[in-house]
Length: 273
Image (cartoon, rainbow, N blue to C red; front, side):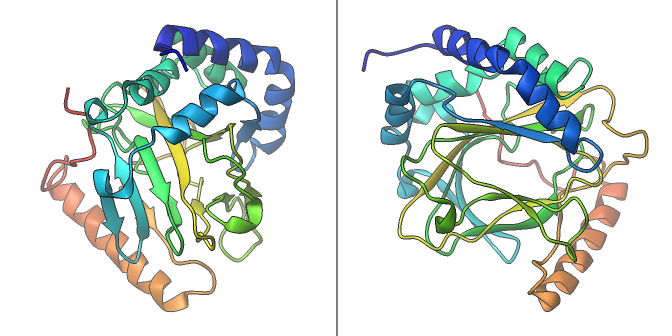
């Protein structure tokens, strides 16, 4: 496939999202009272989406994040990988797309993150997972509120029963979650605030679920009641002991951040250009 740049990609994405704007706005509005979200299938022409998957970095080229909180591979130093991967990430940061997504999600003046703080590429294989959590409330400099997650899935033929799906817990961990299938060529967008608990279900298939992520920020929070918080993990409903440990972990890290406003050490998950 001939190399395609971020301007061309942004044009395709903008047209596809704009064509479905009414439907996506309705989808978001219907879910807004809890955790607002929408998803859109067939975002890019299939041959482009397949190419993104083909050039995705292998596990030995990515960073393994493994703990009781999460188990996944991540990558953010985009100049180390096939250039088209950087192009697709920054296509989502095109001003027209940022404004359009913000309008659909009723977010005023969203701001993309050129440093890809906690964004970039992620991949999960068999038995990997991401426990229920609230995303950190701010950007790396603690100046802007995190308001939207954009997750674009590129693994062909990935079935829902394989796991690795986005899960939303609008009514807490004691109620059934909403599962959004990490379907090939699907864009999922969700709002982030103090109640937007979400997770990625354990992968139960011998394959790799690949995702391209962007996060938008804002000068104001989504909810008037939002407060600063670190990434706050919980255990899955069936893992009671893990839940106790993770709540303690969040309590300790929150108290540390009261003393060290930007943390004890710099978060390494930032694109150093």
